Length: 326
Ligand code: ATP
Image (tube, rainbow, N blue to C red; front, side, top):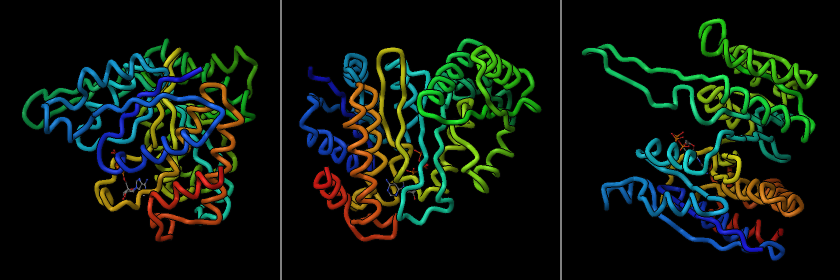
């Protein structure tokens, strides 16, 4: 069976790390992919006036899955609609400390299960009058229930404890609903779980991440807590993610377009390659997904390494080492 994959490298280092993931997937002989590339982001906007051309939307909608690199200034106009196009409601962001790397906390093995459709990312903002602005935060029972069910299932399948992150003491109505709904899902299943205020949780994740596993979060909290976790495991170049819907899915690194290093050929391709491994899992190729993770892990441990991890290797050299390892 051939899986049709939309490949959208986007801007900045997206152009460098996305081909690395494709190269690794092409090296797996037991799985057949057909890759079709499309444009999105700042560069195509400058050319055509549109950051997310209709043909790119259509390609992602019709593909079996999408690999997305990064978008620059136009990120909100690209990735938010793309997540909708593939119908994703859950953003899975694992943050793992790999052996041999100088992680702040070497015992970190976290998975953020981030609600992916609402919260402040609805983009409902207004300027009431000069100097006064508002943002409407949307939390629904339906979306909260869906992400909590997904999070509890994921934790059970993968052997993690569950923590529900919230700020219901301040956002009493919106996070009150999120918390009550997620707790009800846990109780219905007879599952064990903890709840944590997201600000205190940020501190505890830095101090003792080994006490946590799956963290079920509202949208913005999931974005921020997973970047924080990137910091404790060794940087954004290491964190993959999956945006999962009922039928379709999109895989992307947690990092952005990194304009400070774009074009230099030194971006760490690990996050993007690990996102491709999540795509293999998604299609049921667990063994192949594990092989890719093991290859990345081995290269992270013994090198070559890109400059963000203290090495001086190029993106291409690290990618070649991962392919060799496979
Ligand atoms: P966004 O708003 O799109 O999430 P951002 O402002 O968080 O983007 P990133 O583009 O993710 O910024 O980059 C943040 C920092 O991390 C930069 O210094 C960048 O160079 C570094 N960085 C991000 N990804 C990588 C990578 N793959 N390899 C090396 N360094 C990276």
